[in-house]
Image (cartoon, rainbow, N blue to C red; front, side, top):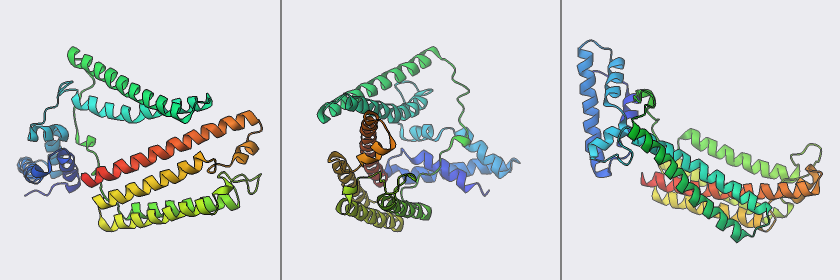
Length: 316
């Protein structure tokens, strides 16, 4: 039997099995591996090298998502099989980026206009729903026209270069080290900001509010410690289990609640920082408002993403 490139084959099999139901995955995975091996052996017996034979076999098998759909009788329709995956991949990217950018812009604009928190939230929700509808409709319409007019969009050929890397559901040693280093740097930055400051011409001028110390800052440092414990537990477990996903969600909610509460009470940011750095009082107030909105938006977005990603990995 010819030895084939394990990394390339593993990437193909992993990509093919992502959308296969759990109760079918083991049998189909074994069947696919055997099929790839048999096809490679047939080509090597005809004189091809193992590497060239494997690339030729995987290329002929085609896009692994299409192969998985054929295994499970999953229909790829709405646009048509020729454009369906292209449409779906592009739509997912657009829906991750455009509504978030639109929501951030509207939140900043409404804040500068002096709208209340309720009005800002209502306007953001409305614009997100509107943008999602428009992005979905117009993207689908474009691909509908391409499909019906048989417009060429390149050769459309799939190759092994398009294979994604195998997705990890846990954390390796490098991820653990990076997480711990980030937490240490975050702790150091908070302490440095409080005792030294980051503006060379203004020693002691902190970006964060001085009233955060000691209790609010201590609460944040405690969350950092729990985050480090979570990172170690994730590394030792090797994958995100459901209990770890819940622990991650609790930490994310606590982190978000602490920062948003401090921001809402005017404790998180130091108003003297902007008044000192920006000479104009009006400009300083405007920048303070914009930075506050950006911080709130970033905290909420990051926390929601972290929670969703944890449960996604736990249920994969």
